[in-house]
Image (cartoon, rainbow, N blue to C red):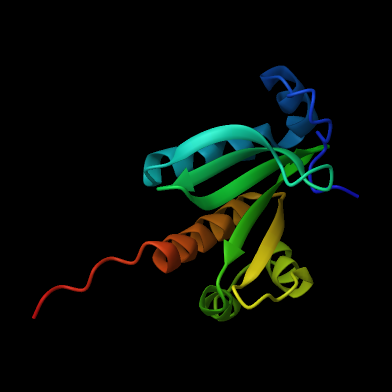
Length: 148
């Protein structure tokens, strides 16, 4: 089973195909994309990622570092957020919804962290993803400490 629904590398899905696939959750897709574009200085593309096990995704990066990838699925989408061990620990101490909690439990722990794949099904999931994106940015782009 792949992460996304569009797994043919030679066929980049059109906006219409994406909208049709996501259909009932298109407003959540648009809300999250608008949030990311307005909150972070991202470079954005739609790319075939990691082969057929993942497929096509809308990818957002900050200074070349992955922020998140959004994979269209039938009836919705999945958000990928990679968190460091420190980020995972912080996330586990937050009050997050069941989809995020399950994503953390399912994710394989690597020395550099975990790849979370979060099915976005509600406004609560959007809020949780937004909070995790803040953790990701804090981990990858910490503000410089002021000079004393």
